Image (cartoon, rainbow, N blue to C red; front, side, top):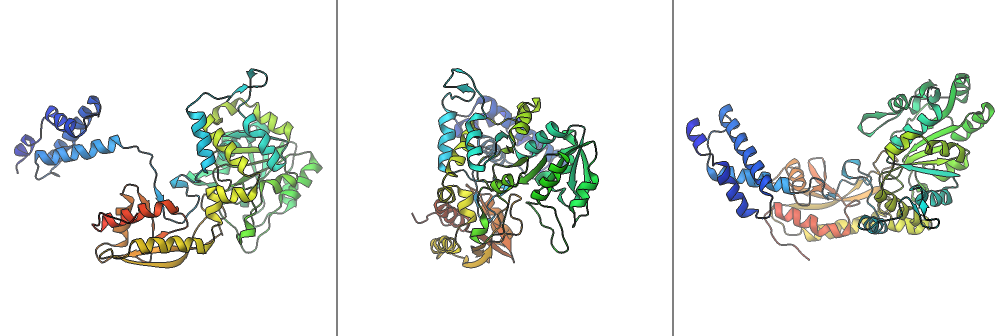
Length: 465
């Protein structure tokens, strides 16, 4: 077709709007017009550039319908995590327990005592809703919660070390997700970084030699998202505390993925708990709420009352404070930790990390049974390993089981793409040209949804109840 003929085939905007209105009668008129104009302009550009060689009014309408459906669908939506990565940063990190969801709903649809003291009838502090239980659970003297751990570190350093030096081991200058690095956060805080030691070995004498009249803090950064192995040496928090006492310097430890549970009892590598770090005498500890704690995104600052109170008074605190929904969820999660066994059962992150392999294999068998008889699809179960994720327990590889899919009709990459494009999207991983659905992170009530998504790809409309 010549370009002139192609241009004549483009329906007028009002015609396209009329057709869209018939299929999407409740859509706002403004949105219908916007989509019609954008699609017709895009088609014109394709014709001018030579990318469009044929055209019909029906094709333009279908393109407009697809674009409108995209605009009408939420951008942030649930997905099924079949990657085996429990605290998957790209997929929203920790799942919240039912108690937290109920708490969010309760304060979302009604007014609350966010900053109102019901006892005195006067203005209160939003932090009071979680400070007491945080101190109860950890032994801290005081606590503050901000919107994430990067903010917690930034606020702490800005308060306690503005314009002064903070001594940190060179081997602990970590980079966290999104290319945020401890040296960069420190620079933004106004503190001055003083590196000591070598990448793999730092001694207590290295810290002591660096102390001078401009030293504000000794800082330890837990390597929660990587490990240095081999010829290594690092100084413990307890050793830094003794050195700090000698020179009158507070010690701050950034735990990154702080946890309240000792995971070594489940055969995983030992991670220092928040309680243990505080008991060692560390002045201030910071950590995330949405990683190993299993709560909402938050940054927690715990420690000595005089230091945490200074941090609370920092004007920057208002810029990084958390909202009522986060507070509600966090309080609900913390309340579960009063009974550790209850927390392990009800907090999804803890339950998924510590899930016995046999329970995972049962889920794999259930999905395999549901996929029996699907044409052109080979289904098997294989032993694999999962990951904790979220920059936590980097060396942990808990045993898991995956359902593997292969087909003469589709490559593993094509299957992965088709599942990812479904509703709901199923996010899987590829190993050895096979698509793997790691069942550790597939919830029991999601198994029928995975079955339906797979059968839809292979042209089967029905699935088991």
